[in-house]
Amino acid sequence: MADEIIRLSNINKAFAGVRALQDVTLTIERGKIHCLVGENGCGKSTLIKIMAGVYQRDSGSVVINGKEFERLHPIDAIREGIQVIYQDFSLFPNLTVAENIALNEQLADGKRLVNWGNVRQVAEEALAQIEVRLPLNARVEEMSVASKQLIAISKALRQNAQLIIMDEPTSALTEREVRALFGVIHKLQARGIAFLFVSHKLNEVLEISQTIMVMRNGSNVSVGDRSEYDHKRLVFEMTGHTIGEKAYDFTPDTSRPPLLRVEKLNASGALEDINFDLYAGEIVGVTGLLGSGRTELALALFGMLPIQSGRLTMGGKPVQIRTIQDAIANGIGYVPEDRITEGLFLEQSIGRNVVVRTIDRLRGALGLTDVQEVNAQINEWVSALRIKTSDPALPVKTLSGGNQQRVVLAKVAGQQPACDDPEWPDNGRRHRLQK
Image (cartoon, rainbow, N blue to C red; front, side, top):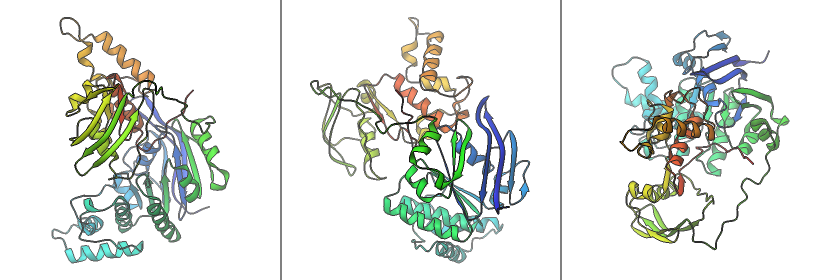
């Protein structure tokens, strides 16, 4: 039998009556690089959290290092060498590189005083394991995304990581940084450490993986050796149908003024002479690495970042966007980068989140809310965006990440924007192409 670090068998999980995982089986061997792929909402995040002990399975078995766990606690997972590096890295931005790497170890010993000299030594040893050098006294908030990734890996190694699960690790890295990260992964693999690499970048999946598991609608529909897959098969397994290269066929009507025209837009320290046109029905993509100005452009167009100079026109008419209210009044909607802190009221219902911006329009002549109309609008958006829920009255926090993102989109779209300004609308996800 192969040297297994973890084996999941027939894992099932549901949230508020909505199936998240159904009979999922996965085995990860030591020293192997496994890749996990699947569409938005297919259950990848739920599976990761079950492996880490964050979520408890409804049924099925979890065996780690030959031991079966009836109830896996996060501490159990860590002690067995399971480490998860999430997209936010779970680092303390106000602490130094050395402190982030070593403090867990110091605290675990139960000491009341921190040995700062030892903290530095531990951090140096951890970074030496992956053969990189970083400024140990620098605050993590000052470090690049690539450096934060390496800090998180070093921190995991100091906790005796045997399996490192990486959730979308390359989403904000340059090609050069991706090469460096892959080099680190291969070095650790050679030492017997296993990796579960979760990504939507299929070219990278095909490059680094040894085995691949594809999930769809909460089930693992395909598991096999890397040699069995190419890009076309991965897409088919993820979606259940063949998708052509052409995603969106559209020719704007340039005989009419653009819906939005941006001319020489400047914002202090963030944007300089930005120019583009956006026509009705058109999709304009804005790309760039973190810090390139893509987020600041979205904020400026929604009145959240002061515009120093430049000209905005909508439908040929000049507009001024000084505040969020100005943007909304001119039909501009905004989907924030962080749905958890900026996009949703997590304790409120799915329905309330959907209609929160349009509730005033749903009041009757006496100022009373038209409950029937409110419910009709909620049900319309739940159906249109395929939000998976058994009841819109449930708290939005019960939804998967992908379905929460759809609620944010419903909230903005219900506002009836003339221009939807989605800042990372799919947050690393790929849209299903529909006829």
